[in-house]
Image 1 (cartoon, one colour):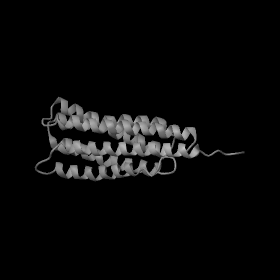
Image 2 (cartoon, one colour):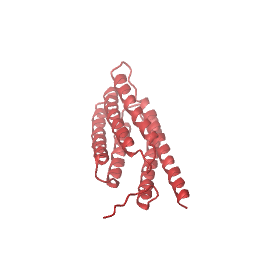
Image 3 (cartoon, one colour):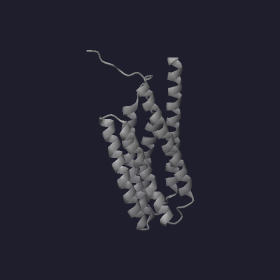
Image 4 (cartoon, helix red, strand yellow):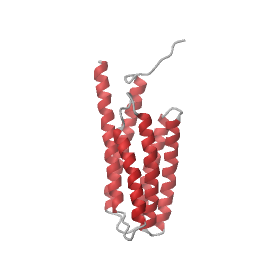
Length: 197
């Protein structure tokens, strides 16, 4: 009985890489767009600001669902499910916190979500490292920074002058790292196609 192993230039692998590239690019562009919208809408925690606060984790939840559907069964898929459920719960929690009218509760929720989702992103990044998807350093850096920034947000929320200004910076940074990962995947795909010719 013979066994077949996939190579980075196999059509199935290339298709998976292209799908992930589109997901990362879309996720990154949406994050930057959200940051621009939120930067001009969070002076007061009104309906617009609360809607934006709920939308951001939902973007992550939908991205996790799309990623989940493309993954084979395994630990990476379970982590993706965890992140999707976590982001959905974060969207509900930040909406409740925002409805209460307080900056500090919103920052606490966002910070806790950033810590847990950042840790999940690091785990997924490590599992995706290899010849098919590259070293995943933008995702690993983004996940690590998300974890650290989330801790900082909770410290800031407990202080005297919490501010939501930091959330636009957080989203912009995350978006840039997703776009960078998409660019690296695109470069790797072209490189492997060139080698196959």
